[in-house]
Image 1 (tube, rainbow, N blue to C red):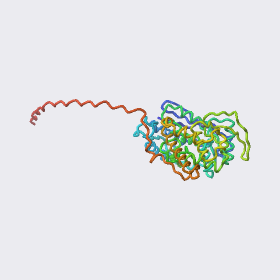
Image 2: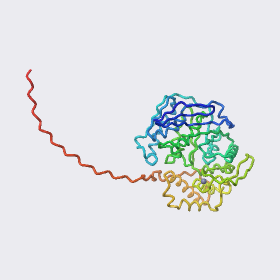
Image 3: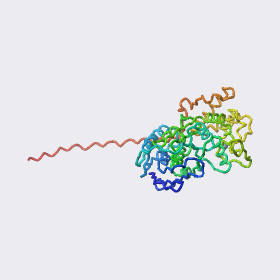
Image 4: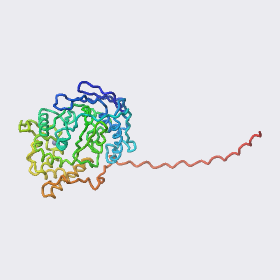
Length: 431
Ligand SMILES: [Zn+2]
């Protein structure tokens, strides 16, 4: 059983005591007050609805009930109750769900319910300086009040990252609200299934982290693989569309990564000055402090330019014709397409080791490359292109982790012994 106790409030921090069986955890969220955001013009929302969203996958995947004496919004409850069907639908594909049988997938929320009025806080979306978040802020600019940067979720923050975040905030014309949390770190330590950030808990953690701001709208940004991606992820439309209720609504503007990059470069090319997609630590000795009309930033190679994420981003930038402007990457290749194809596409050993979701990501890249070649070396019509994950996405299935063992042969049932012959009943006594 998972139990959520009453949250504890200290100034601009909230602490949620949660027990999982006999393990106790304290999830902490601190809303930083020095930011120039308007998000703090009202008291923090101290209800448990955000934490319930975050814990839902853990509860479903471990067949645990969530208990609390604190209420949640009835509309959120009804939406969360749709989630078991989603996990059941994708169950057969995921080895990460193989510990639970499809029939045991259920959600049991044991807490009072109430009807919450719509929140009056900001419309929020994350900012991490990667493609997904920058695209969403730009694309949904009219709807986003505040971009939220969550320390403890999106990599290490140093003076370069902080300066470049401020620059992006000016280019995008959006204030940034900083939040610090230990949620992702603690969730990663839980000795329970379903804590995989990328596959199960990504957007749930974001909801929990921004919930104290009393957001009236949460805009998710997806992993750049389109809403119909046939495999679960922590930022999947099929999951996060259920994170909404009477208090807050949500939406997800996910489209393929190449389309996001194209939109960013065409509308705000200066974002390439600070784009950071890589999670590796990079050599920061060669940095230049630069100023333009949007402000100052550190010109630095903040992307390792060797990992799969960097390679894929660079390939798209290269095919879109902006390789020379990708100054946050090291650009020492002349034909990035050949480099990419040799390293990944024609590398059979590499392809064999790919996990299910990665194989679907690869299908998208293969189709972008095919489109680029068909167009004679450009991607002018990639926005209209729709990606196919095999004929229906069903031609890719997981191999079982280990071959099934044959059952032992059935033993014959013991032969029935004949019953002893019936004895005649004694005569009835005379009355
Ligand atoms: Zn990298």
